[in-house]
Image 1 (cartoon, rainbow, N blue to C red):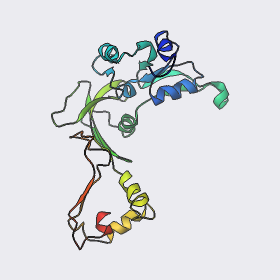
Image 2 (image 1 turned 180 degrees about the vertical axis):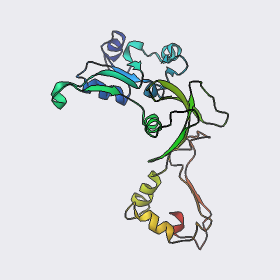
Image 3 (image 1 turned 60 degrees about the vertical axis):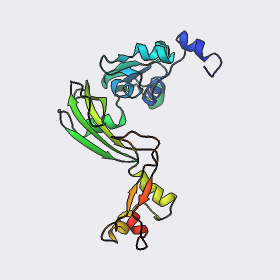
Image 4 (image 1 turned 45 degrees about the vertical axis):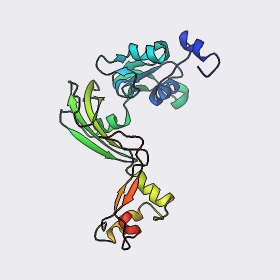
Length: 231
């Protein structure tokens, strides 16, 4: 609606919109394939994770033409081949998955109950719940993952938005650390936190609160507190 001609292009099928993987796929195939997988589609908030289709009601409410969106396929699938000009020959593109779902798969969590926790910029715990959708009563979100054969299954996820990123903050903003690797040495220099608690809700709180208005705090500071206790 904000770009002249974009609405008309969307309506007549000459404009494509999707997730980052669908853009990469489009580029790698030389503009031949506009598709994504179930795991990435499930994160758009316009995909029905029960019938595994773009949600017609939501598309109508948001006035999004279905022709704009990528075809949704299993994570393990021959999506197409790379343009020979890119790598010198055509290479089959046979798999796509979202980051945390890829981590669940990569750590071999193929059976219901199998779980993994990935520590990176944030911290993300995913549990394989199998072919039956499970709705959490404890503030976790239900999403799509993939089984050992790349077919869609369900999982529960709990997210902490800021994990490793807090080390960057200590280094780049507070300048407590010169290098990220210094964090272990500094943390070991004191016997405990001396009552200091840091809640790094810099972008809000994730599971189970999902409150984007919360901000980070440091509590428990006394005259005896120092930067090592914060680390």
